[in-house]
Image (tube, rainbow, N blue to C red; front, side):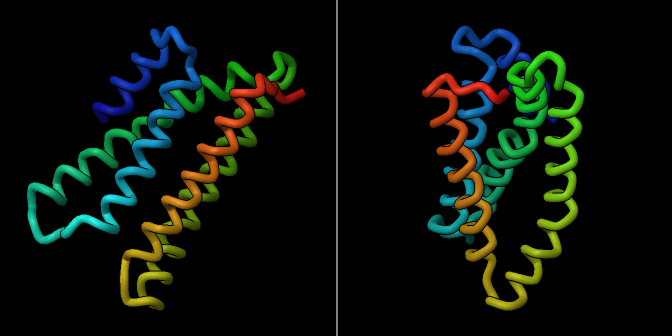
Length: 139
């Protein structure tokens, strides 16, 4: 909850543009997921810190992302862009938990699931950073 408010407030005021907070959130999620895979999780403070980190950035990204999506959409296609982006997002929200649970049951470990999520977030980060750096705006 705090991430949704704080990160949205930051994205409204970021001098470097709304994409920068989205980029930071994606990077922070990748870092958090990688830490889940390499840090010993036998300490409650360590687990609590990682869960708080991932909760803050992993849930907090949504407001800045929606605003950024609306900003980069062509003016006559904003509704379509938001509708499509949110539809894809909701499919992921529905499919990811059982898919990750199946992966955990199949492998006996959470590591492949966390690694998969980290890889997807990293690929999205790289793809969007590349587009942002070249100044590419969808038609």
